[in-house]
Image (cartoon, rainbow, N blue to C red; front, side, top):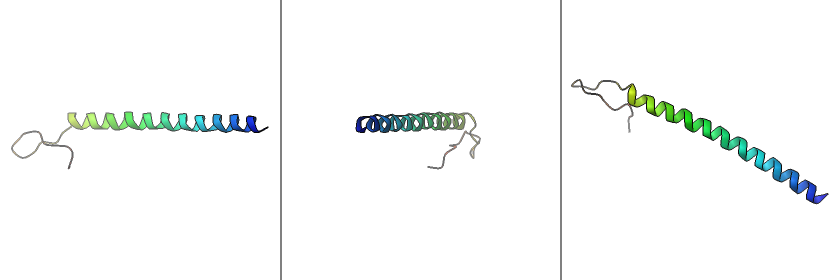
Length: 56
């Protein structure tokens, strides 16, 4: 009975980790797309040159 519980717990843990990693990959792809769009859509700074789109 104990080995069965260990196997089920391990399967549940690996499934949870896999789901979390997949969600983190999607978040990383969305952040990368927004970051790349920031380089394309930059506001014009004073003097007519392209400014930074970030504030840091």
